Length: 220
Image (cartoon, one colour):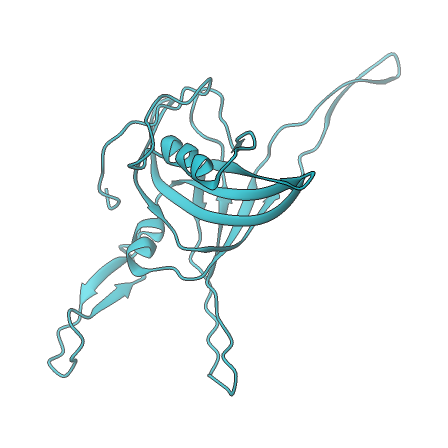
């Protein structure tokens, strides 16, 4: 099955009380350009018996994600990175309600749930899969700025983060849906999991992660 597209990267604030996980304040990060998921190599735990290997076990030992989007808008940036805004009060500025966005001691980067849609093709049939990372934490993005020349070079923001195990009963670190008939179906699955308006809310099957509805302040 070939993966031929990517769209609709969503995130939501992650919180937990024991093994009960909730998501709130979900948002679309931007228009997806590229998503990379890299896993750390875990050593095989091998049981030797009768002078040879008898059993082997391998467990998730961590990973990272890198997301490139067309833009990272200020309101989303404040949510996913914990950046705070400050009003600019200069009387010489004509722009309405100008603001600073501050990376400083008050920055409090939250844990997030993340989801995106992967477009797939099998035997010339198009389908869509929802990919969920139940718990991540994003890093501050690096910046590259280039002066404009004769042709425009589009700069697309890239943001990376760490993939973690959920605090739910099964400690899930990734979920992938079956292939669905439409992008809208895959998007509805992501919204349901991340408790975003427009998706039905129900407990996540077999994980103990209850995606409760309700809006909370990201700054909490």
